Amino acid sequence: MTEQTNVEDLDLSDTELLELLRNHGLDRRSVMKVLGVGSALTLGAGTAAGAEHDGSHPPGIDPYYGYTSPEDENLPPELRPDHTVGLHIGQPPIQFHFDPMGLHIDVGDIVRFDCPTPDHTVTAFHRGHGRQQRVPDAEEPFSSPVISIGGFWLFQFDHPGTYDIYCAPHEIFGMVMRIVVGDPDSAAYDGEFGQEGRPPLHRSEIEGIPGVSEWMLPTSAEIFDTGAMSVRNIVENGPVSRSDVVGDIRTMLDVEVDCDVSNPARVTITNVSGRRVQLRDIDHEGVDAVGGRPMLDPGESYTRDGVESGTAVLAAFDRESDTRLGTVRAEIDCE
Ligand SMILES: [Cu+2]
Image 1 (cartoon, rainbow, N blue to C red):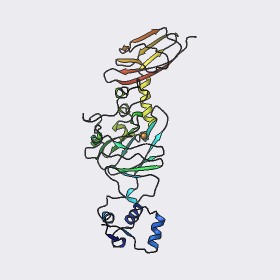
Image 2: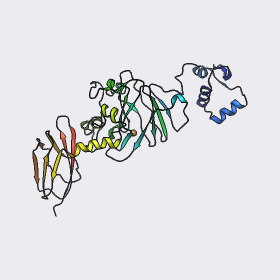
Image 3: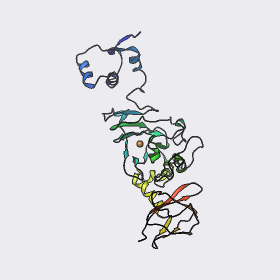
Image 4: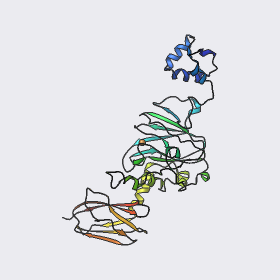
């Protein structure tokens, strides 16, 4: 049984009325037409009654599901964003990325996530998603839906602390970001995470996927570990861009290993870092310049004879943490 209610009997604001009508499939022009001729519009009582309760129905930002729209729209003043983040597809090494990747905001700020490219989500590292808890404990396990091209998603960050966020389809490509909310003292949790739930993707986890041997891109765990993405850097020097993070990774790459191919067919690699590393050939297409996985102490050199012409791409790994410390690309010319 559906009791019919006259919409004029409801105590609704203009905004609520418009939203209610739009939810019933009427566009703005139709709404104005209806209101203009003063029609008594009837609606199902259940829906209409629902519209009378607190302010959590649209337009509002849900603590779990935020507020999403498939296209640009005029937002009411209470939903105007304080910051905008873009979800992009660019070039490697961090092809899928948030822009910025690190952001410092005030408690209660609204962030708008714009999607000029397809198939992204904005998802919290939260035990409710089976992930390591990397947002404030008071926070719900929030996530956007997959946002359509040209659409956007809003979320209000109500709790002080650090929020680590990922794009569910693209985390494997390093699509993560960090938002520091409020007083940085309350956000000083770098590296302090519980054991429960899956942490950000680790190199060994990706390389354990059948068909994947050596992963060439920075992982989400490695990105969060860069100096650029530290809470301190985000607060003091933010917003942090993708190029800031890439630059940080490149710095890590350049200083660790030195490769000398001046005597072709003999490759000498010196560990110029201050730590013990393991060398691996990560470019199976090219020349194998190391043969096996030799360990090198600080200052120690490794020499391999009989190397063919071509390109070798090697990486130095920290054996204990299994994180990649640096990469060397060597052009070997035996002519
Ligand atoms: Cu994505």
